[in-house]
Length: 348
Image 1 (cartoon, rainbow, N blue to C red):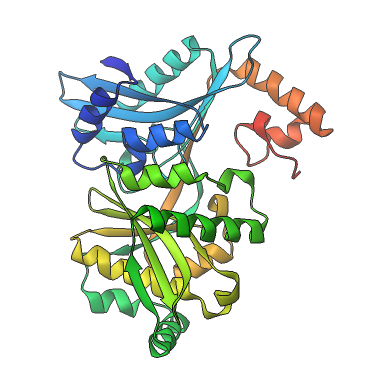
Image 2 (image 1 turned 180 degrees about the vertical axis):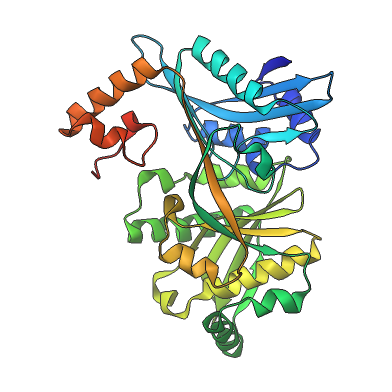
């Protein structure tokens, strides 16, 4: 079994596109956009078993931990990337080979979210995945009546009410559309006092719209001549993903995003997509965001993550140092939900 470490644009694209199913999170463009957003240095690990015609790919971002000793860790892009697997290949051997390579690269740990629609459940156990929650999706291949039957009654009432008021939805992927969404999104993040992780500069949105590796749409809803909500939705390999969204302050009570999601569902059907993935709650939690999304469908997918400790001694040392900074017992953060523990935020 051969292990390749890919950073070249053309080779990355060739490998990912060779899989029958992949998502926009796996593409070179999105990983490069994340690099430009200072999230880390992108690398695609690719393993090929030519004897059994099997292959395995995992995109990651390397982040620096310490300039003194060169240690770093690996994480994933924002969203649901994770491994791609096809054919007959030993998954446990893939995991061990990648860990061995990471160790040689002075990597302390690896964290990655997993895409439930691009890797079979049978591969999850040998990958040592952990369940972090659940997400919601709509099966776009089912008849439209069956899809609407799964809507929460309150969602249906809101859609009807908004239609009577004259709400409209449209696509605007122009620079002007990006500018409008940027103001909308930044305003919403400010209102929510969001973590800086959820802030993106304008160039990030321009790059999404310009990608050649996947299709990104800016979808807006308006009422009385005003734009009241908007969202970025991607399409790749028949999978529609909700990426980011926002609603203006004055129209929160009307819940226009419900109409927007319904509009995207109908758009996805026209694009012959098979899945509309709405995602889950904040950081996989069972919160109001997840409750809102559950109002569109009864279909659930497990939200799985990879949490690999590559260098245990260094991991513990870093965790103890972080605990000292936070003035807590190191076992408190070591046993907490945040991974890697040495990057825990001060919420304990």
